[in-house]
Length: 424
Image 1 (tube, rainbow, N blue to C red):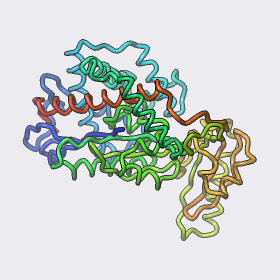
Image 2 (image 1 turned 180 degrees about the vertical axis):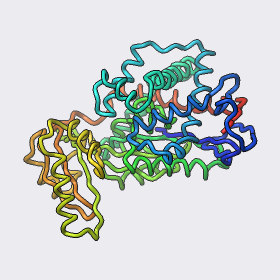
Image 3 (image 1 turned 45 degrees about the vertical axis):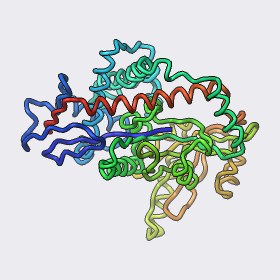
Image 4 (image 1 turned 90 degrees about the horizontal axis):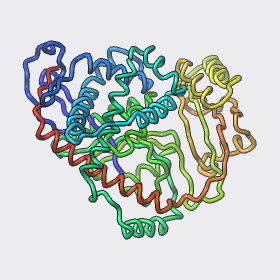
């Protein structure tokens, strides 16, 4: 399992590097002729950087403010530098990306921002982003993994013995709790860069907890194998996780985001979407959408009443969970998050009692918490099939892990050998 990346600014801004890269120091002057960086023979323009920042803002639910643009600039520039190195390797390997792969990725992104695929171009245009900017990013994400598959060749194949061993390990821990996790992975190639990488991870955690779309952040910044899927790892058994990650995940509730976790290979940021008991065949699994309106503990009675009314109004007349999420997004001061799958017994007893008689589409009244008001909508209720992975799923996961390891090694080597000139 793996997760997130990047941060770079020129010497004029301290030459901050999220990961080790060769750096050429320039004077503290404006970017020459609109050039942000030169990577080997390819140029990244200031316009390229500005449009990619706009894309991140449009898809991650971050406000388009000068402060957010300034804070994102070094991290986004790093993704563009990495993307340029990846595209150069794709050209070397003769890799192209079919339109069908792009279309599937666009459908997934539209879902992440709660719109239909046909509305995506207009949505981006409203945020000052041309569709070609997103397609360029997707081509690199998809094409890079195709190039890695070609480079890894037979070394990424998974033997029957490897699958048998993993299946036995999973069966031994089949009673373990399982977590539905998403990840952002920030690799650490050099221990000397640990402080800088950790600072980048802390910044991304703050953005995610502040309302940024975790899947969009993962798609942009993560170096994990699930980055193209918004970091979604699916259901993961506790015994599949490294010990430092197990310890942290056990403390998370659905909807929460971890602090950066230092584990093998780098830093991990995890988002908990749900949890269930192991071997949970036939168990009830709920899909929920919840909103939260924060309120100071010192709030007056009038402020509490006004907040309760505002939270209640978001849920009035909503058609489904997508509508509920869209309403929350449009309401000032209200945070929203989806819990795709959670077993009732893992929820607080009071909430279990409230949700038990509800039908899909029902919305709770505002529930008072020490820090504000919570409103929950039941999206779906179903019986969960066996939680144990089948052989094909295990083989696919092991194959992806091998490809991910190859990708990390190759990108590290490409960074170290690159002729990089950062001009801002």
